[in-house]
Structures are given as structure tokens and as C-alpha cells.
Length: 381
Image 1 (cartoon, rainbow, N blue to C red):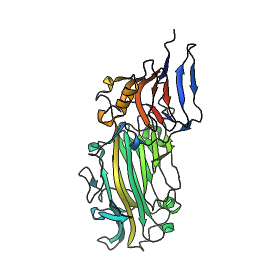
Image 2 (cartoon, one colour; image 1 turned 180 degrees about the vertical axis):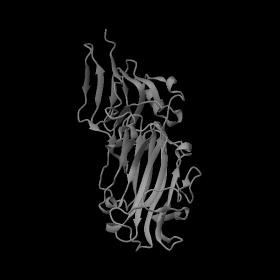
Image 3 (cartoon, one colour; image 1 turned 90 degrees about the horizontal axis):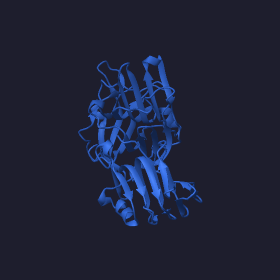
Image 4 (spheres, helix red, strand yellow; image 1 turned 90 degrees about the vertical axis):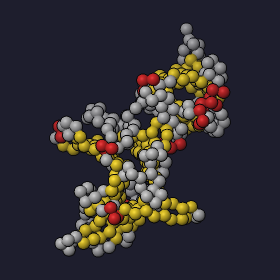
């Protein structure tokens, strides 16, 4: 006996993002078949900071307004990445005003210095949150940054990076997620390099199952760079637009993507690649960072085993769900829309819903012209 319910049951974690160019209706007919009448359907542009089910962590984000928060430690001479030497004196704070808008930012510099033996080296700046004190796990990470280059862009040896890494376990393994790793060839050619990789000694070699992407970004201008790190995927963003996704590869290993806390680093490196450092420049330039922001998913209950079974029975219920002061836009176990009555998304409105198990639509549910419905199957963490 058909109960006139359209039933979305989670069979995988593929999100449903829909933006309508005309009205559509979802209805289950008495013969048990579901009719989707969706003219001119287009894929919506999803961006985590605009998702009301994500929450900005003000505690673990940093706007770099003249200082850095205590969660950061400065990289030092004992931290070895590429070919420079990290020194706290290369960490600065600056500001600029353009068209009446002031931007305060962290500035990491690369300066030529002389060691005790009279040899040149480049001192550079970097900050990190160590994994053993790191609150960073699944969620969305974003910075706004640029590279300021002294001299020719075509010959620069700056290497700005925003990345995470960790190494532990038995046998030991190493994982790295680079939101960007902008070596000189990429800066020169207006490309962006991102990748995820790991090393497992029990395989006897380094595996690079998801290596590299070049996306035509000129980093000498301000851009935003983000990573959505979820249980089952990594999605990379530039200027709010998703452009690269890493998915699990069960045939190789279960550690894709990563499932452990990481070191989180923002640093400016210098490198001998592709040309040796010649030390002709007293200053190579800087990596400027306007902010670092971290978002986590909101849950209907602090325990993943006690998420809400939520029902929207009327347009009034939908209005209440969309009211930010009610704090209802969060992860549920199931979401049921309708009780046999027609419900419509308000015109020009985006509705975002997350559930771990099911979406049920009972009766007619309308998404009118200019509105958007995002149904996102999610894992609780």
C-alpha cells in the first residue's frame, strides 16, 4: 500500500545541490513510482562558509589584527622545510587601505642573513599549531593570502604554503594535505599546486594517489584558498569555488582521506628548486595572510548517537527552521518534510539540510524560481 511518501534513503554520501530556474514538484504516485519533473535544473554553487549548518570557530580562527593568537607557535631553526631557516624575526603584522577598506594581515618575510661563518642564508617566517595540541580535524579551512615578490616573478625562489601533516602509527606512516604548496615554478606560471599524499613503509615506497593540480591562479593578488575535510572526501576551493576533490581509494588503503589530527602550518619557504639560491637579493619578498578561518559542522546533539529525528510539517515549521535564532539548521539523523500537505520553500531562499540517514518528502514540496534546496547526506563526527 503506497503511503504517498517520497523517500530519500542514504545509499552513499553524494550531496544533492539544486538551484531551480523554474518550479519543480516532488511527488510519489499510487503506482509506487517517483516522478521528478525538474525543468532546467542546474548545479548550485556550494560554499561551506555560506552553509548555515557550518559554524565558524572564533576560538580557533585568527583575523591577524596586529598579532597572532596563542594557539600558534613560531617555526624555528629546528623546523626544516625546503632550504631556508625559520626565524621568529621574520614574522610581522602589517596593514593596507585600498578604496577606503583597511586590511590587517600577517606578513611572513624572507631576508638574506649571514651566519657565524660568514655564509649567506635566507631567514624566513612561519607559524604552526602542533598536532598534539591541535583542535583541527574535519571541517572547512580557509585563508586569504597573496605572495609579494621582490624582483622578477620569473626567477623568484619563494615557496609560500598552507598545509597540514602528521606522522604516527605502527608501522609509521606520513600524511600531508596541501591546501596550496606554491613553489617557484607555480608562482612563475600563475599556477596553483595542491595535493594530498601519504607514505606507508609497509608498501615499501611512497604513494601519491592524488598528486597535484594546476589551476591558473596568480598568487601575487589576494585570493582565498580553502579545504573542506570530511570523513569521506577532501574538496579544495579557490575564491569560494570548488575545483578539486580527493575521494577514498579502497584498493590502495583506507587512510584516504586522512582521519587524524594534524600539524597546521602557514609558512614561507625558499627553495633551491629549480635553480640554486644565489643570494643576490637581500629580500625575496613575503607571504601575506589576511585571515585564517576554521568551520565545524553543527549537530542537533553533542552525541552522534542521539541526533534528532526531525519533521517539518508545515510552511510555519520551515520558517522556524530557517530562523537563525532557533538554531535548527544543523545535522540530524533523519529529516521528514511534510505530513501530506503542500510545503514551499520561500521565494529567493536557500534551504540547507543535513542528515546522516534519510530525507523523506511526504506530499508536495515546491522549490520556486530563484530558490535553492541543498540536501546533504553527511557523516557525524
